[in-house]
Image (cartoon, rainbow, N blue to C red; front, side, top):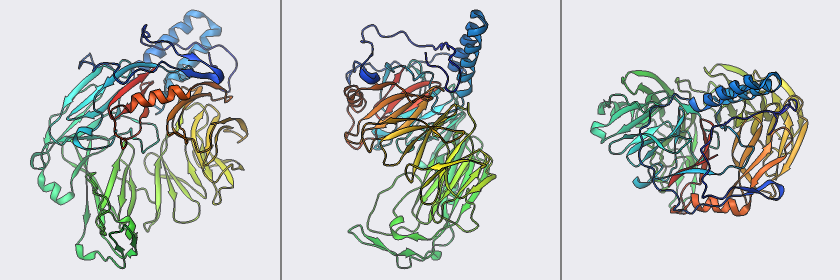
Amino acid sequence: MLRDPDEGSAFVFDLVEHDEPDPDRPPASLGANGTVDVAAPTASDGADLEPATPPAREPGAGWRTVLTAAAVLAIALGTGIASDGVRDAARIERMRDFGGAVEDVSTPLTERWVWDGTVGLADLGWDATEATVLGDVLAFQSGRDLVALDPATGEEAWVVPLGDDPACGPTGVSPEQGMPARSVSVMVCLYGAAADREAVTVRPDGTVSAPRTLNPSDTRRYGPARPGPDGTVLRATRIGPESEVDLGDARCEDTGECSGTIAAGRDIELRAEGAVTGEELWTVTVPFEGAEAWECWNDSWEGQTSGFDGEVHPDGFGGQVTADLVRLYGCGVAAAVTPDGLLLDPESEPGEGHVESLVLGGYAWLDQSGPARTVIYDDDGAVIVDVSSYVRGPGVADGAGPDTLLGTDDIGGRLLAYDADGAPRWDVAAQAPEHSFLAQVGRTAVVTAQGEDDVRGLDVDTGTERWQWDTGAAGDWVLETFTDGRAVLLHLIQADSGIPRMVSLDAASGEILWQESDEAAAARQDVATAEMDENAPAPILVAVDGHLLEVTRTGVRGFG
């Protein structure tokens, strides 16, 4: 069994609950270079699971079962192995709070269960595949229901019927995000016609609050309602008289060509209210920034965009709501607001910046309008440090090594590491101007450089290269990363075919533990995209309570 990175060679027992393997499904077999071929199921494998209402599980119970079993065995087996067992149990417990954590990715993953059905609002004309890690279940809209799946078995933990025109959030699993899904403790669902639209909250055990009817006058005054983070309903609208708008020389043609700049526009007011009480919690004003004509499409806060129509829309704006941030984008606005209502922008005057939430806590504001600069905030929005480089945190982490941030300088010639408080740690030559910090596992930083065909492991203490793995083709890029605290699982998109495949590497050595063959990856893609049109979102992977799931618009599959 794989040892912990950067530790001794003591043998570690891994005790993980798994379903019994299907006797009718051939086992996975390893080929050359750790390639694994899995008998691919057909698109029709697995009937719809009957709705189930088992006793509610305590959030995180799956992980804690593993922890308890490992600790008991450690005591029973004696001092030497006990220390390894306790360390292994501590690793599992430590990773429960990190997105992208899976019980074991060191051995080939095989399909354990299938749930067939609509994920998202495909039957209502939406193209998004979105879901939420709600406590220890995967929750998603399926038509006009909110469905929760047990990640270990695929059984429906509960189903909450919704009314017409439902919208639930925040969502945390989307092909556009690329970051691991964060677990939330509550979701908000809105449903019903505009005149009598209602809001409810839903907890991980399926408990639903009493419906609250939204006041139509609030919609007229504060803007349309959307589900928000932490049990809130969000509203946003442009404020101020329309006479403040000055299109300047901004123009768009029917051909799709736009030119010129909007001289003045209206600010946006973002408001949060309690979903259950309706009480106003906070309001923040986002100032209008200068805008080019091509930025001013017919975007809508309600999530419906008609696209380019040959006109300049000075009031157009949209939003993306996750558990960590509310992002506003559109004509004259590019802003991020925390769930507590803090606008993350260090400039007294509006500037062009990009905000990311950090896996290890806090936020990073990256200046995109001038010299390299990043402002790091803590969870409460207080500024920790302001550094002269473009800094990002790891995509996933196991929490074992020192918290690490990586950045590049203005010209991309240097790769720099910082402590969580912004203190410089090391400075080495960069492989390329831009790097993706895929994971930090123990004292290894797993990175890849834009445009390169390799993944590298760096010593987080010194920046020294520990290992290098060639992806096999230039242009392959990593869509998602997961870890069990010892190995990293890369979900790669192959540049030549567009087909995703899984590769597992030892985080300490870079050794290939296993990887999907081209045939197995293509078969998995065929099953995942069956009955989906060519414009449907790509299949995505998500970790839920230590289990790895694949989510598509037409169903969910569990691997183990």
